[in-house]
Image 1 (cartoon, rainbow, N blue to C red):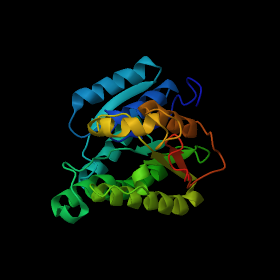
Image 2: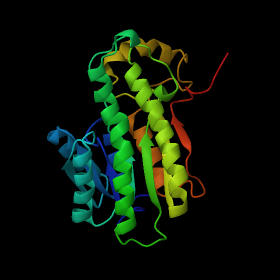
Image 3: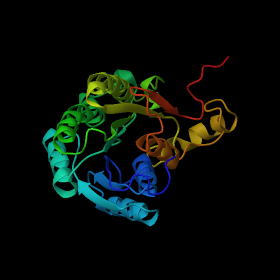
Length: 264
């Protein structure tokens, strides 16, 4: 992970940064001295807490900006407001994501749930990335600046959950989106990473904690026998932002305690 103050002067945006994994990412970027934008959809109080946490550990600045990234107009407005208020974008973390409101068998998935989940988890990041790249091109920062875009996906990109198919499809699609933009943007000096968390202890996973706890303790799921924490993901983001993998782009970085390893 980067040293305290290493990212001072640089600007990072974390969508869905008010809670869960997003808050962990914001905190670790703050620890490195970054100016952090906490994007949120509706929970202004949570976003304020996230900003305060980043400032406590050393952020140069932490500001909250409201926008629903599933709304393409609002997403474009978010990018514009970041540039207007902070002048540049060095790092963009696509973290905002939602689960189905109700888990249903794939034979019972509704069109409403499909469109809701894919709108936030897949369509939004795809088109928002176009706007982010335009802003990175135009903001006047030097060509030597290491610009990065991170996509927070999930082990559900590959692990099947038949009671939330729309979520799995969205995350699998987002994995391909990360590869597409990595291939397209390498020539422009913008590096792209997919960060793929496993079982992370957040509000989203609270409802299934009891179902997974025993399998975690016995090593049936992650080989590291504990829940992941939001800061585990945040430390990976911060390390990359600090140039931890300078000769890399398009990588999938598993933050899952070894869950992705196939075992007999």
